Length: 75
Image (cartoon, rainbow, N blue to C red):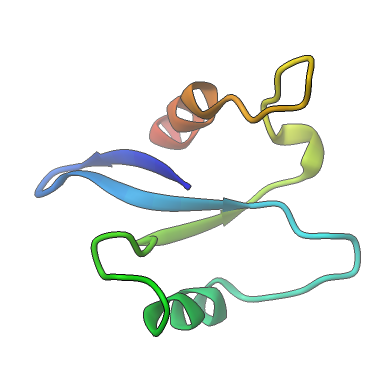
């Protein structure tokens, strides 16, 4: 999850999901699942599904959150 610019709150939580091969879920299902388990201010406001190759990573495999945040803010 990353923060993207939001007019009212400054930042909004945005979930970026890489699904396993063959897995399927709709964004609305995922947001509904989060509703009963995560506090409102921590819950994602939007969901985006990307391929594994699109996930920015370091040479050791860690996610580059700064790069991911910039990509989500630009789109």
